[in-house]
Image (cartoon, rainbow, N blue to C red; front, side, top):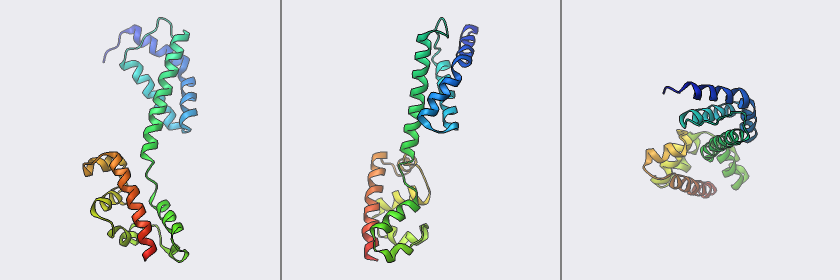
Length: 172
């Protein structure tokens, strides 16, 4: 993608003027240095792809636009990461399960092998979801693609599977 010299100079001016400000905005949303850097990069790529140009990179309109772009890029990264992290780690799930059960069941360790009796009692469609999310550590979207169902279905089946496992744990 060959950019006109004027566009290149504009992007360079924006980088020089706003890179630190953009990073601070992104960091305030994401609270992670590398994700904030990714957001700044995404924002500049968007400026380049959409051939954004203002007469003066120092103008208030340009500054507002760039801040809006970085804020949206940061929020997109935040939301993507949030949806990927909805699946709680396996050990956290076991703690919740054992907390709901009787105290003598707290000896169950957080390994997949020791929870297979609980998983084996699940209907196939719930077992498959737990297997993908917990054992294979796929994301919700990867699990949905693998199983040919929607992401909402994956989350709901996972929720129901956890309830069934808690109930079955009380019967052991």
